[in-house]
Structures are given as structure tokens and as C-alpha cells.
Image (cartoon, rainbow, N blue to C red):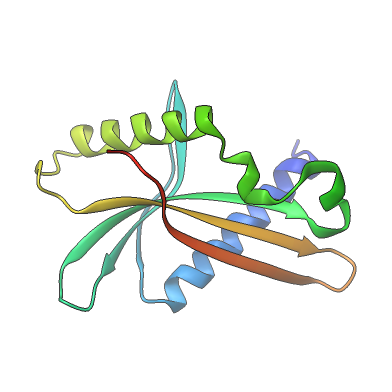
Length: 132
């Protein structure tokens, strides 16, 4: 049985996927999990120079009406969460046999949903997690 928290997270990920597809990202994988972490969305973006970038995307969703209780969605991507995302992204690259020179980055998509008026505010922070 899905909890209200999980339903909100699933809705946020759906909104993020639709947004990315409208921005011409190609979704490659969803909810890729390992014992130490999960990547919500893995996509490919073609930059203006024609290079293909692999993008690992962490989606954080909050109910706008309860924002005071939990803070901004992106605040949940703390030091420990960042470490898990980096480790999981590197493992994905290894397991899927990507070359070492693959261009990749980690983005965060923060979504605040107002369930009363069925509106969402989305912020896409590119290269939000530094892995160097």
C-alpha cells in the first residue's frame, strides 16, 4: 500500500519526467537502485555543441502547504545524500560499461506541489552536486 508521502514522491517524479521530456532530454532509466542509494531519473541531454551528456537527477518533492514543516525540497539533498548519489552514479557508469571519458553531471529537480489548486512549482538546478 502506498503512503501519502510515497504518492507525493511518485507525482513529483512524474512531473519531473514530463518536464525533462519537454526539454528534449531522453529518459534512459528510472529509480535505479543499489543497496546504498537510488537515482530517481537518468537521462541523456544533447548540449548545444552536439555532445551527449548523461544526467543523474535527484527529484525532491514537497507539499507547498506544509513547506514550513520540511523546508525547501532541495534542502533535503544534504552532504550525506550527495555522497550516496555520487557513489550510485559512479556505480551506474561502471555497471553499464560507460567509457571513463563520459560527460556526466548530477542535477536536482525541486518540486513544490499545492494540492489545493493542483499546481506545481519546479526548479531545475543543473550540476547541483559537485563530484570532483
